[in-house]
Image (cartoon, rainbow, N blue to C red):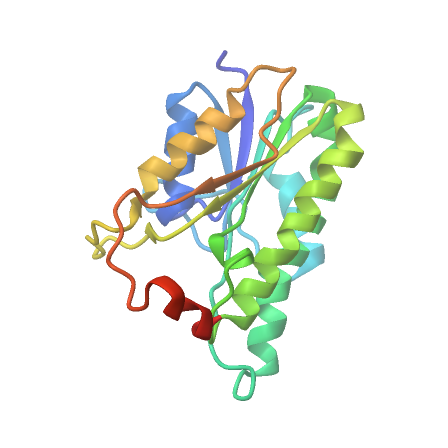
Amino acid sequence: MADRLALVTGANRGTGRAVRNRLIADGFTVRCLNRTSCADHVDPVLVDLRDGDTVQRGALAALDGADRLDVLVLNAVTRGFGRLAELSPAAWDEAVAVNLTSVFRLTQAVLPMLRTAGGHIVIMGSHAGVRPFEEGLVYCATKAALRSVAEILLMEERQHGVRTTLVNPGAIRNFPDDFATTKMSVDSVASVVSWAVATPPDTVLGEIELRPALLDPPPVTGLDRLQYV
C-alpha cells in the first residue's frame, strides 16, 4: 500500500528519524516537518515550531497535493532544563510553543485530511509526563499536558474515524554517542509506533508505556523510598 501517507515532525534525528525510516519500511510515503533538514535529503518545507502560524502553514505546505493523511506522528520536542527559580521565561515559552502549542496547531490544520483517511495520530509523550523530576519543569509539564490532548482527541475524533495513541517512553538512546544498555534504542521505540499504527481498524491503543528492559540498581530502595517522594 505505497499510497499511504505519513507526516512526522522532528524527523531529522533521533527517535523521529527512526520512526520516519520505519514507516518508510512499512510502505508509507513519509513527509517531514523539521526546523532543519534531514541529513540524507533536503526537506522542501522547514518550519520554526515556536511559531504557531508558521507551523500551520508549514504543515499544509508539506502536504501540498495530498487529499488525505493516514498517519501523523507528533515527535518534535525541546528539552530545556532548569530549576523554576532560575528558569528563564524564554525557555518556558519555547517549550510550551514547541512541545504543546505546535501539537494543537498542526493537528488542527491537518485534521480534515486525517478524517478523510480514517487516519491515526501518534503523540510522542514521555515518562516525564507522569514521573516529574527536579529541573524538569518545562519538559515534564508539557509532556503531562499531552496526555489530556491525546485523551480529548480520542473522545472527540473517533466518531470521525480518527484514532489517537499516546506513546510514553522512558530513557532512550537518542544521541549517536550514547551507548547506555539501560536505555531503549530509537529503533525499538519506532517499532512500537509501527505496531500501534498497524492495529486493526476496530481497535485503538490509547496509551502505551515503554520502559527499558534493563535497569541500574536504584540508589534508594524499599521503605526508604517514601522519604524521597
